Image 1 (cartoon, rainbow, N blue to C red):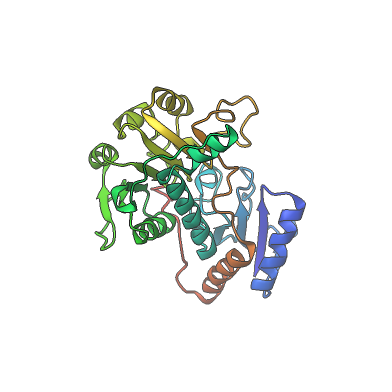
Image 2 (cartoon, rainbow, N blue to C red; image 1 turned 90 degrees about the vertical axis):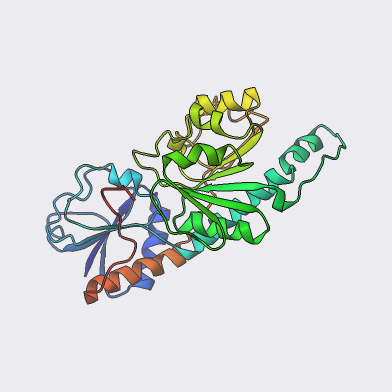
Length: 312
């Protein structure tokens, strides 16, 4: 099997991926570029946000396997061959890492740890009232692999947890489940902390806007761990300044790296992370890629295929 590895990473990162993938699936010829000699041989493209047009002219291509969980940029490439299936990365190690970040964000917001960190910088000793976990309503937007795992772990810590999806979803014995646009604003109005783990699609882009923030419970907090384009930055800043929101934890930005003059940097009610809530683990992810390559070779069903009509 001839496989192309390509994407938006530097040479060192690419070499790390190549070594991990070769160890996980040695029975393949791995290529780092397309040329007239190998274009007709390549059957699989293993990609990390490749440049638009990178996968043209591959007549035997049978699978596009993404190394990233999010495929919004990949799906934005109009030159992708329409008949070739796309698989996204669902990595247990990444799911665990995202759950850890969601737990940290909720605990920090619930217990006021960001406020206490600010007090330390001011040499201020002051205690604030402390709620119990079962007095805090947490809503997780998006109940895919990451969102559902995070929601269940939050419930295990004693929080009242609800999950919201744009599409219908079966009930869950551990968390409340809400579906559809008509349920979103009523759910926001009773949520103390909202965790965004939605996929980025045309329906969810810009969803976290002025109307969304106004629907939230006054003084609630937000953690955006999904995509920067979910949030309208100017609307979030207004919600923070007015007191409608008390704090925002932001791991993702509409422009990355965040420009040096962006108001988020110095905002006392914003905690920034440089897109590290769940970094792909090359060792674990390479094993997941190998499983799909083996399934393709053996004519078995592929895992984690993208529904192109939905965008994820």
